[in-house]
Image (cartoon, rainbow, N blue to C red; front, side):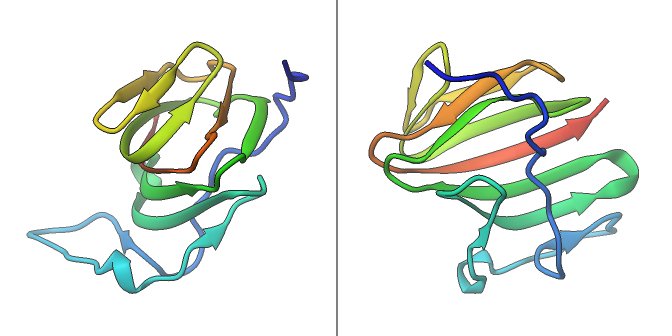
Length: 127
């Protein structure tokens, strides 16, 4: 279906949006007021929610445009978790719908995409 490209970068959180760890007590962030940030893959957009570089943790919302597709790639050293909030999202094994969850081992190669569009909650943890 696609050519494997393990050199594709992991999703990254840059800029001043979202909450930067470590934190004490409760912190709040109004993601609805933030603009979607483009990623290196066309049709994939993120809104950073949390980043803790010291522990290798990242949490963000990801919007996937209808028809967007990412070739086979890995997230080097990062455990990936995603939860489908709207629409549907697919990898090489299955299509995930609203309420579906996926946990992917560090360095596991996978494709990603959405036929009709999707909104995901995505979390990365570096081991």
